Image (tube, rainbow, N blue to C red; front, side, top):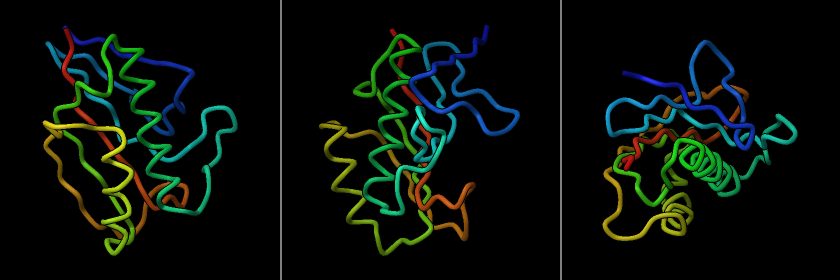
Length: 126
């Protein structure tokens, strides 16, 4: 059985998809843009602040799904400028501890709403 997870503590989906889906013992969090849920706008043009907001959004969705960001098993990070990889790593390390989640990171030509960072996650439940 699958179940949608939603929260007002993270931005709503900007397309025909859920914030997250529970499937089995996992929570699949859709790619999070650096949108402030209170304003519906990008937090800034700074990739470090954007990565921080993406991870805050993931944390809020994880909590709404009955888990926590510390139970993340896999993330995918999308960047419009891979030269910011080290900066994003510094933010990432403030949200996760060993054992760090598995991760893929890709440079893309563009992201929705002009964002520079998007992060999706798979989080363990239970």
